[in-house]
Image 1 (cartoon, helix red, strand yellow):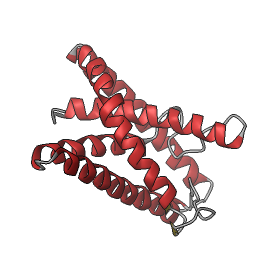
Image 2: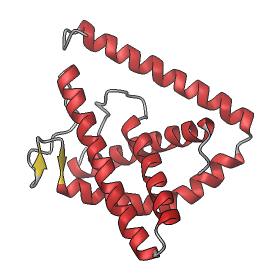
Image 3: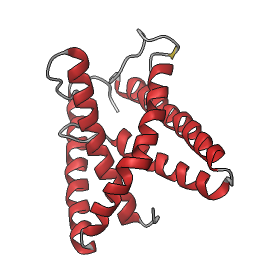
Length: 183
């Protein structure tokens, strides 16, 4: 992946939306009823997945370029992705809970959890998702994103980021107004 800002933001938006969709389907199947987002940023987007998708792709790219043995590169990239994304999930969960008193997920019922923000089961799931993303999903998404003319892609990115910004600021103001936590 080329590291210019437009590609970064394009993939951030795509993986944030796909991650939201994946979580919605997963939670709906797990609970047996239609799951409606209770996220910090609503309306079809989750920044945790957008950033995680980019991090995973970059970790795999760096490992493939710097580790000669392909098996070692695969193992290192998968383990690195699991570790970094799990750390990011922990920091995000802890920050949302501490700053806004807003707990989006609770793994306290899962074995081997840390402060209920992360657990071994979902860390392993991140590893599986990383492999699926890098070897099956990203190659297709990359072709689709690069097929969009640059000017149109730029306009779309600016529009979607603006909508996300407005939505996030609205949610922060709403939480502040409800006296969840004064910022």
